Image: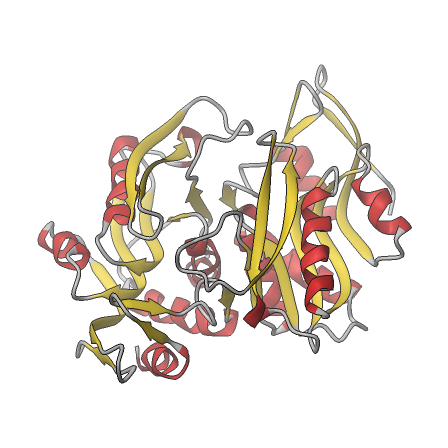
Length: 193
Length: 193
């Protein structure tokens, strides 16, 4: 998606260790008008899928998911990273290893909000090693719901998550795929799509 | 806001200990079409304020804030609850006591995304003891930005947060104020607004 690639080139910051910071518009400060354009693009890319629910994970996936959901006219469910006293006991759970925080955590969704009749689109801001998305797919599989696809804002094409998910035959759409970055020059190289 | 009150009556669940569960449409599964109506109502209520940014706190505030922000055509910044390795060192920080999780945590916002020229609307899903909102106001004050007001989906009118904030002369708008609940009958009593 050219609009997103242009924005990443303009406002993304490349740091040592293949870190791409997009917190000015994607995951700390959030440009909701950009999210709306991303939602329309996901709607085009998943036009044929009978999606009735969007699943994401706290925290930075929630904003994108909620704006994208407006293009699909469906509710959003977000997986929580720790058990809250406000969640009923009956939950689906999976384990996720965080690249950013260097730890393993549980993700949970109330069984009330994922059902066998659901057709689910997974939305997240970033795809790197794929652990968060695989955890969300675990929850969907445990519920008996149907996974219709995965929509990602920014995929790090040089990590294995994208290949792993595509190799499973899952319909994955990443609006921008970063294949390489140069922290000396700040250059970002996108995959042709 | 009658639409929200009706939805709380229909889908909210009253539990012992003055707990109101609205996780079917507000803070676990999220009805983004309802959020859009809430956004239009906040826009009406804060029509005269020169708001250029919305500030919220992860996780359950983010979805509402992002959809509401579309009515204001402004970006959203969300305060994070723990220091992430992906955040630059330069942050504003405050402490918040969580009623739900029974602990004290730090909230932080990058100094890049709150500035003296900003006119900020705080948005959150719930207002109870007011600690989260007061923490966000701390961050705004530390940055030199102007607080234009606070918009809340559901205020627990029987806790002190709403009174505390209004007593400071802050423009607070809660779309539904629950003054009492009966966990035996499930009845919910809203304040006339």
